[in-house]
Length: 315
Image 1 (cartoon, one colour):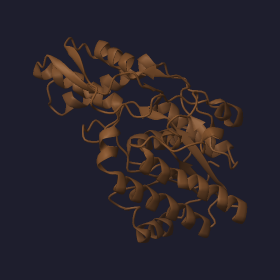
Image 2: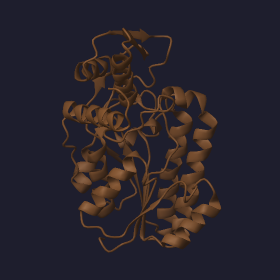
Image 3: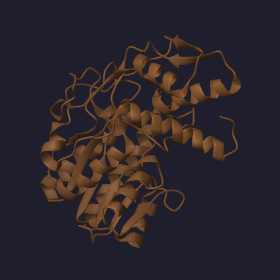
């Protein structure tokens, strides 16, 4: 496997950079990246050009258009179109080129809104996704349908992984599109810098989420690429949940923010609960997350403060 040419789409992104490093640390010497600006993978001609130029044996498809609840509400059409127009042609072209393996990354947003907790892979089709996430979640979920169909008809080796919410150093801190952990860290650090007496947080704080440290996610994807070759989807995550209210309290504590937290209950909570059953990942390719959540949050805060200092922004 370590002699294979492996292309990581979205390899310049948050998870992609960690995954490239993890593969290389494990002894892989032929790791390639397909990402903007070199390849716009929404364009079929760029997909074909990427395959022509890089000639991969294995494709790990991370590239996605993604954001938090507000971004999802504002961009349902482009989230559906861009993600489905990357995933479906990429997998199809891989089949036409007879590559050895296609590793598709889905999303926890593909699960039904009221999935019993912890989410089991067998519950994936038992209802419609939470409304704000549905266009994105369903677009990614079509790669599972395609992977299973191509395996059954053509014998094509495509697998489908379902990561839970990621966080860690290098995350997206843009308030227009970031997820909850970087958004909260930025709110607290910015409020301290500017002397603001309060921060405003969306929702009621009652929803729960599971969070997956990005370096653990990279390890899980490497292990699945090496060891997993079956049609069934596999959850990858940390296997715990925390209420958003408790998450806010932890980030407030670790950043040192002393002001008030104001909850804007007019804004949506999103899916009521999220936590994965991760037994299949352990049984099939020996993965179990190893990063303590508090330590992971601390590392993420330290990274964000470090980048602000490096950029000359007050902390």
